[in-house]
Every structure is written in C-alpha cells, then in structure tokens.
Image (cartoon, rainbow, N blue to C red; front, side, top):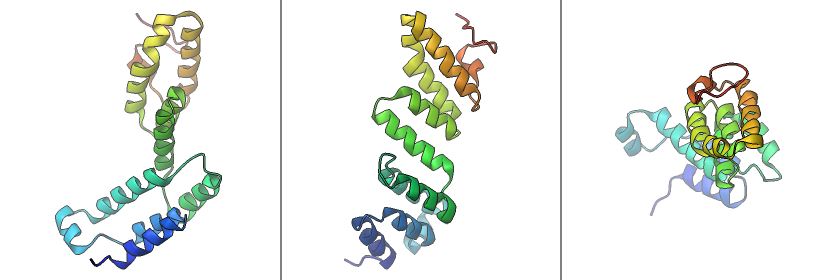
Length: 164
C-alpha cells in the first residue's frame, strides 16, 4: 500500500515524540485530490483533521506542554481556543467540573459552559445549600468577568441572588 510522503513524515514525527511538528505538516499539506473532491472545502477539512489530531496529542500535564504551546501558538498559528478546548476535555475526563467550565469559557464556548453549570454544578449546590451555594455564587461571579451570562442561569442581578 502506498502511503503519501506527508503522512509518512507525520507518522515518523509522532513516533519520535515530535507530534507538534506532525501537526505543522498536517496544516501545510492539503488533502488528497480524492478527499478534496468529496469535501468541497479544502481548508475546513485540513483544520478539522488537524484539530482532531491536536486533541489526541496535547497533554497539559506534559513537562514540555508550555514550550509546545508557545511554539504552536506563535509559530504555527494554532488559536487559543484549541488549547482551552483540549484543557476542558482533560478536566472533564479527570472529573474537575469547575476547571472544565472555566476552560470552556476561556475557549469562548459559552453555551456549553452554561449547560455544564446547569447539569454539573447547579443541582448539587442548590440541594446542599449553605457553603456549597456560596461557593457556587463566588465561582459564577469569577466567571462573569470572562463573559459568562448568568442571566441564562436564572440569576438576575450583579449580587448573584438566585431566582427560585
């Protein structure tokens, strides 16, 4: 079976632990003619594949993560939203709801963040009340500074008093 040279190079880079360079190659080389004819949107196909590849390989706990992030953002042009989405996915996998929501908000995924708050944090805070509810209010207040619209959660004023 014939493997195109860019895919072969990307595989070698991944095997050598240089996945960030494989991502660069993926972004520089377009899809095959057959794939291009199917998609009609060459750039969208390239970015979609690259983003999926990025999500599989970016680990925030990796000792080289900071250097890789600087390289990918500054040299390759990977948007910050990709990093925030990847961090949100890792937080969700680890069961860290607040980090998950914070990264969704930082990644401009406000609808998803609102749904996550409604499904993951709000019910238990309302049931437990007391300190849990106070912590929820503080968390929501901190997220409002990053663009979260608390009105969608039934919170109607800046002091974050719940409408029940």
